[in-house]
Image (cartoon, helix red, strand yellow):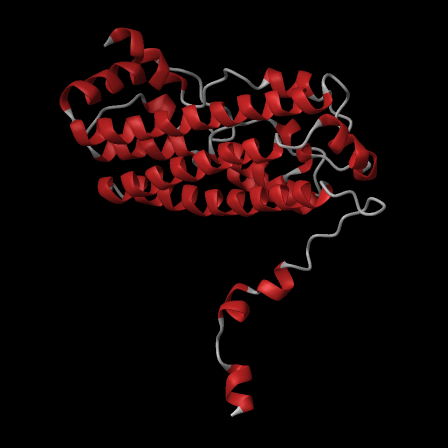
Length: 264
């Protein structure tokens, strides 16, 4: 009986709860009460980034297969996950600057700037900048290079439109995918036609706008949270802190989808 019980799948064993709960290791003396919150929030972010990567790749497959309804479902899930990521900032902001600075020195050179998974998210969304991975280990740099050599989410959407019968510029479709996409007037003309004549494709387009807006919302909340907590101090990883984060604001991912707004 005892052997059967020990080998049976349980909530704890399936989710590896015992192992999971050993992964929070505060470094401060005491330790400081708020360091546990800081660790758990950021570990949770990494779990959500892992899920986002999982969902983005599936969304790309659905788009490239021309599966409208499944793509809509996955893209909607991504937007919902991003809302959760934004909401977590509210929890971090319950920690005052004094409470954070009580253990900040123990973080040494570690920084959110070193999150390989977030760099992968950026690459899937179309960022093509070798500087985003230069500080990461060689194996991670290779993984990100592989992502940037393939279709971004936007490229997958353009393939989806091609399957729907839309004629897109050949130089856009066949370009080197390791080079960042540049807004294109002809693509914007096609997008206008999509919105005017093709409700299903227009819904997919608007899901991408939802995701773009969500990314911008998360970046803004992150900047203000950091500014609220450390002001304009240098980041722990040597970045310029708020100055660097602020430079990422108001840079839409899918620029063509925003450009056409004034043409409706």
